[in-house]
Amino acid sequence: MPSNNHTQNRELQQEARAWSDRTGTKYTAALRQLNSPLAQGLLGDRVSPRQLIAVLDEHELIGARGGDPVLGENGFRSESPWRFNGETDLIELALITDMLRMFTPIPGDATPEVGSYALKHTAEWFLSPHCSYVSNGRLIWAAAALGLPIATPDGAGPNLLIGVPEREHDYVRRMVNRGPRRPRVHHYRPAGYEHLQAALAQAAAGQPITGGWVRPAVVEDATPFHDWLVLQARRDDAVGDFASDYAAGVRDSDHHVARTPEELLAILYEVSLSPAAYDSAVITIAEWMRTVPSSVPIRTERIGRNAHDHNGWGAGAGTVERYEYRCPCGDGTIIEEHDNIPGFREHDVWITCDKCREEWRFVPGRPIRQWGLEPAAALDGTH
Ligand SMILES: [Zn+2]
View 1 (cartoon, rainbow, N blue to C red):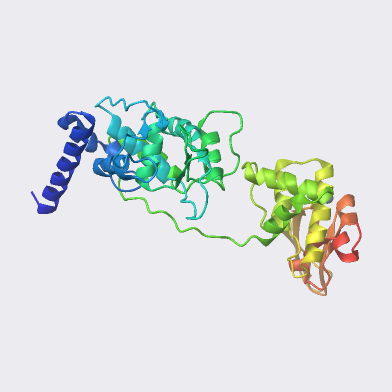
View 2: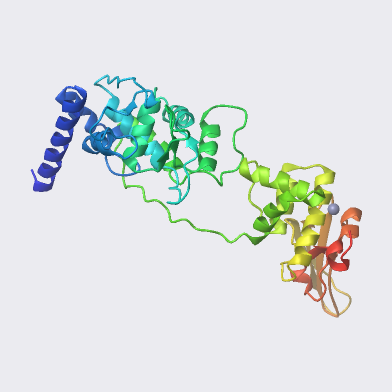
């Protein structure tokens, strides 16, 4: 047996011994659990019983630190002792640990805001059927062992606040609780969510997990239009109402973030808002374009294209290229046409929708193929 395997086995034996001594679990049962595929650490290192025990003894908030235990099965400062079954406790703690690992770490100076009791239910739903019951105390225990920030909401217990992002938790909860408000878009999906679901299924089926999980680097997209729009939600006018609805839609994962006015129009088309909301959006976009003169004009989705040969007008054959785009309101089209016929080269673009022809203008000075729109109100400064 190679020496590194030997060292690893010794390590596991010591871990199993520590768990056995502390919890009254049979040594062989502890070792068997540590060797379970489900306890191997699906998003990180294998769970360490010695570290779990050290947290109960030494953690600054939930550790006994020489006194009576402050954490029990029901939570913080509950008098309920741990109820170890001696069969699956370690595996379950390992699974709760992985469930917590999938979330993005919150910044060091942020205040934890997700209640342990809500999180324990989310863990149960997420880990089902591999872990059917998660106690409040074990959720807090695993979070503390993982080093997540923990706070007391009122000092009393038994529930504590755990440092995972509130939006990500809300997303996961609504994904797994089989309720009616399932997220439609996934910008708040925790980085480890899909990997953990796949790895859980593999481990439960006894298949080896190949390749560890590496937390992806956080890429902060610059979203000036979105940022500006969200700020307008405080206003007491049509733009404020519209911005407030938009911000709620992002928060509740009902639709995507609009990085540009163009993306905002695409979202409105997808969620088919009321005509009044669309009108508010046009006013909002006009204001944005007046505020930021360098903003990029709007293009819409291309919905058709064709090119055909043309016999020409006596000076030889040519082609006609024609592209069709959706108009901003979605009820009509924008047509872009190029006649490539000897002696007759025409390039033109026009809006076929009466409403949009009133409300939008082609930004002047751009080649036809680079046409872009802005609200008429952005040009003349009126609504
Ligand atoms: Zn239109």
